[in-house]
Image (cartoon, rainbow, N blue to C red; front, side, top):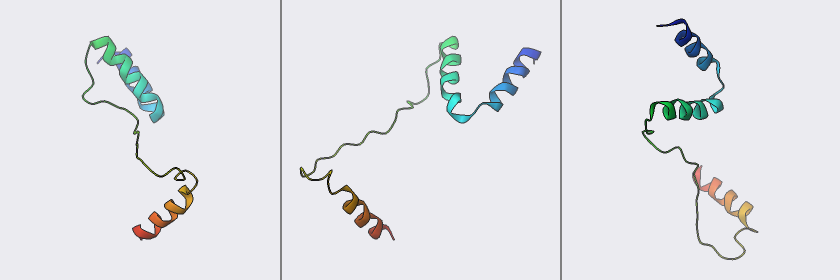
Length: 68
């Protein structure tokens, strides 16, 4: 392995986790490789009564009580 590759490995290992994904995309772009999976944020949707937003604390408390 070349000195430059060793240095690159060392620097990548030192990166904080949140910096890894953008760097991984950059390297994949250079190789024209497609990612194995899609790294998308979770987005949830649901239907509820109009006062749902006003009652969210009450609903969360009741869910916490059910999980115990």
